[in-house]
Length: 416
Image (cartoon, rainbow, N blue to C red; front, top):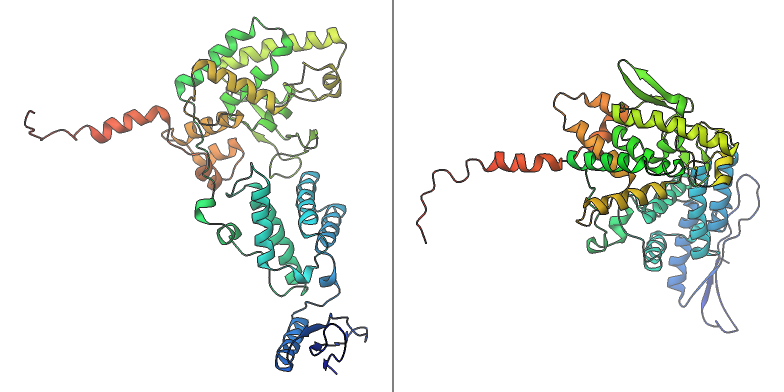
């Protein structure tokens, strides 16, 4: 019988509800856990509910798998099939580790929106530096899980996706969201001050200390991403009309400690031209090229990757052809800005500040072709406009004066 009364034992007097569906393909019975309820009326309701859950796919063999193990198998499968690169696989592995730690042996069929909400909130409460915002770590994990469950839904393994669209807004209050840090933009005077300070410092430093300063000079001129500067090579400095630019086709991965083999969000082999280098920076580069070559010859080391910002501070990394790390670049830039009194209002400054600055200058240049600018920066036009076009500090006072030039005219005020 589907519903039977329990005659003895600890649950005597209650009703046990069973269903026994048959797999249409194999003809074998599908195992469905029984349930115990106190009344026959409730048992009849539970029986209908269990059948509904069965037809929704809750008791399919894959739905009975451990959630964490199934997610791990999915990650391994995508990576083995070549659909994911190393960086994507590395990122999903972190999601898997979090799921395994929190959900333990919970089955796929038992994962619902409330459990996903609890998981997200637990992550924020146990990771003190974590914030609630778009593109934050918790947002990436939820995006991973939504994509995974959407795949399960399409396969009929789950009926509903337990991770809703805009999950952060459903799982967290407005007052729990983090405020994004204001992106600092260097003014023209600040760029000049930084360049002058770097160039003046260079000639009093050994060549092993030039790398990070060269990286900053390149960033201030071209707005290249830090990982692109790490991967740029001497032979990629080319003529573009009467100007000299880099023709780049690769970037460096600090997670994998090797070249990615492609630019960000680009196919392998696709290259792009950067903005031009100023005559001052070109002059410094030519001097550094000679100094670096002599330095490596003295060490009997070959620049196997032809990197401009090869790590000349560490012999082992030099021999391995490893570039300088982004942290050393960021630390140097922040120290220089502190000494020059730049950005002392709490804004975060990093190598990406150079990129934002260059792109903002492009966005505020009269007559600028935005499609051309976006291509030189390595972005789609939409992303370039949305992310990198900001008001310039240099124009703030001009705009204020323009807005207020007539504000006091025509007022006849009495003296106090």
